[in-house]
Image 1 (cartoon, one colour):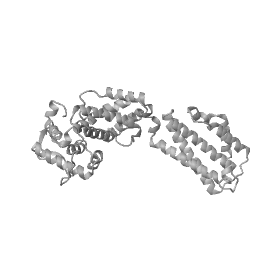
Image 2 (spheres, each protein chain N blue to C red):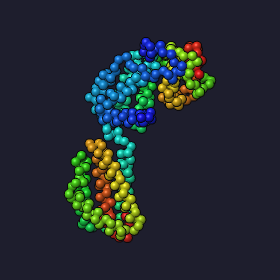
Image 3 (cartoon, chains in turn green, red):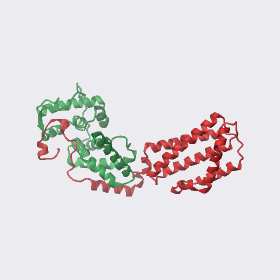
Image 4 (tube, each protein chain N blue to C red):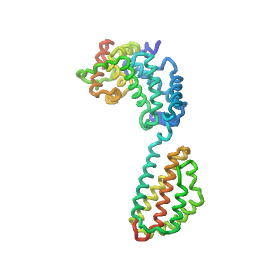
Length: 186
Length: 196
């Protein structure tokens, strides 16, 4: 089976689960939860930097998803849809925790050409710590773009900012990571 | 942030090598399920409902039925006023009787109703002769309507085969058969040389 075929099978299987969940089948929804919980929790944790908040956000994400499931278009990606909900929930949670909005200063330059390669290999723990120490806006953009693979436009849309702002935040993230890790980020 | 032990000590050369997934420290599902169940008890209307999750193909069939129904209505509005044939009235009565009231699962079985079958067979028997007597434009219009209705019936029956309890699909199928009967009775009632 090719990778594309495997992906098609997974999508079909997922679409069937979504359809069953839409009829009120919580077992099917649990299967979807098990499939996506790790990525959703990873996103919430990186955005909130707090395990308890991340757990709350993950739960809220799946409860919101359950409510909105009948409106989900099975042609689109369930993971992207869940990540959008997770980003919204995490941003709202963060706003409640610290009502002052982070500054979204547009710096010169773009994050467009960055491949996020490191000049010398670095321990995962060290990178995660450096990402966690980034300012919120830069961290959000970096997580969605570099870790989750969303385009600038998609990441900007999820975060509710202009694409230029998202690129500027990525540029800022790269500069700060370079400083903190002491390696070139290409 | 990604756990502990050897996974954290692993070195990577790119941020893209970092795993986006981090397993929650505990199983969050029991709490999610409890909240979902609490919501269902307090607000049943907020639960996901199957009728709103119709695949686009079925919705396309519904749109087709709607468009054909509009076409039938337009066609009927152009028909001659004189429609006194007793066979036509009989067919209409049968049609109305079959389709009266809100559709239920049982309504879908109306196609096996002997009265409906008899009326439909009679109309189909004379259809070719009636069509031959129509002007070419009217004939083409009737045949296009019947073909569209046939496709809609097939799509809906196929969809109902997969989801037999779907009330919306049942309703659409009933409407489709009703529209077909209207087209047949209108053809029956039309005079040669008069448009449909």
